[in-house]
Length: 401
Ligand code: G3I
Image (cartoon, rainbow, N blue to C red; front, side, top):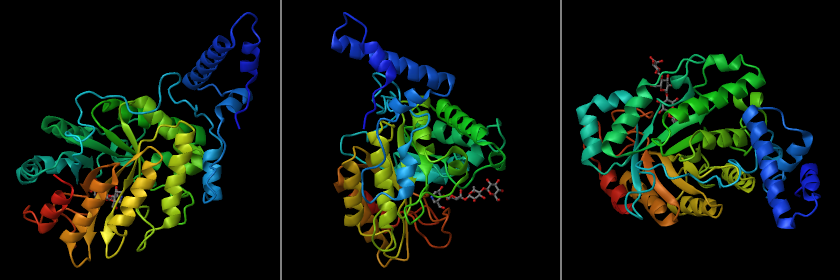
């Protein structure tokens, strides 16, 4: 229900001004008021909050109570993120390969560590084969970037961004908000200090790579498998609406960046995936979009094992369902173990991305089996000697590369 705003009614009562002009004046006045408050971090008046909270909780019956609470009140978050002409969509960063270079061409990505980029065997494999996107496996996580408050370690992240820029590759930033890799100093902060610290982290990190990092995992793994919110330090300290605040801050920090949400077990409800989590992600995106909070895509991690995380068709259907909300999807951390036909499964997931219509990339969580978070399980496209496995050809053919 859109609540009227005292200011609007007062403005509209000004004599001799046409209704449209009065409405425009009211919107401009209100926007200026909200922007001023947001900029000065002065708590908004109750009336201003009433206007800002123009949309209520999720209308999806499947939404869990936790989600309704999460998105019901938008403390500190304007419903129009940039005011006026900002529709919350990414602006053109110029030069950075954001969308696939040729229409319909998908990005093929790999997660990398900075030291790998000084290994000629590693970089020649990236450059010789069809890789066009890099994700920072660890270098851009909160604890790696800001281990002590106000002390930033940029070296690793800079190395990845500089290498990618020199090769015309896209970069995915991973990740600004996560329950893991949180440095100890955050735990000792008050709620207000934690909000300021998170906003500062987002501003510093996204500001440094503005126009150079095409896509950020703003938040990673915030839901439990039952669809409720994970009880993280960020939820505890910032409250139920912390995601809306974070995505708004992220868009303000770099309007050209695509803002993603990233998770596992949310790929499909099949084979050990969680339909409750799939729905929780869908409902979160739906609610944020309805409130005009900028969010542009969902990352499906895809750490496949046995039947998990489901068939290519189920994952394609989930991506297409998310597409009805106006967001893109990517397979962001693909690796595959314990399957009879690894190449066939890579091809199945590559086809799912190719056919979904709103999927723009497949990224594997590492380049070769010599460096993986699943040691000894040979989950990737290249073997320990950087030789392509049948999975490489199978995936890239299915992706149409
Ligand atoms: O950088 C320190 C190093 O200084 C220290 O000597 C060493 C030994 O303690 O640890 C190093 O940090 C490790 C870091 O990887 C870099 O190697 C952390 O302990 C270790 O926990 C961290 O593991 C990473 C894990 O996320 C947790 O951040 C894995 O490499 C990484 O592959 C994994 O990736 C996650 C995604 O971010 C999210 N989705 C799931 C995926 C797999 O868990």
